[in-house]
Amino acid sequence: MNPVKIYLLRHGHVDFPRGLFYGQMDVPLSEKGKRQSLLAARQVVRMGIDAVVSSDLGRCSYLSGLIQMEGGPEPLFSESIREINFGRWTGLSWDDIERDYPGAMTRRMEDLKTYRPPGGESLGDLLKRAKGLFKRCTRGDFGEHVAFVAHGGVNRVLIADFLGMSLQDIFSLQQDHACISCIEFFPDGNGVLRFLNMTAHLDQALSGLPQQIDPTAT
Image (tube, rainbow, N blue to C red):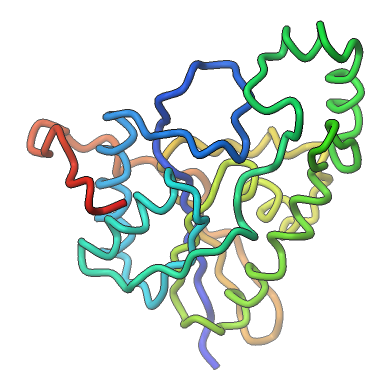
């Protein structure tokens, strides 16, 4: 059995007010995010992939669709790797949460692994539901080179779990929009983080890219 490489991609920049907790809201990509998605799609196709496993939310399915348009495989979509569910905090700002749920955000930040917003998930819950599909990827169930298209929160908890980090420390793992990270898994069960938060593909000149991306890619 050959090693398995998992390329973890985050979706592009979204068209949504900064500072609001959107979580599982199906928010649209900005035009910048669409251009970032095209650059990320082209980069991961150049790396050579056998499969695309993707969150079914639009900001990820857009990127996965572009991967297919650029010559990659047809995506497999799953709800299990959607972003964290913020429950009744969804759509609220930090100040809104402090006003409506005094002290709750402080309690969450002090216990990210187990604290659940009302009707929502903890980071531990997120890891539990995302890990099953990720494990299938690492076993080679979908091929030896897999593009895993998900969200900042999802990718952070999976990378932290692989590294043996506490979920309390996940914000020390940067995940920029449309970044790519890579973990390689070997037949003996060991693995290595090949690179984290690669964004060099986004530094390419955007002048040659279409300003409007084909909406059929969604």
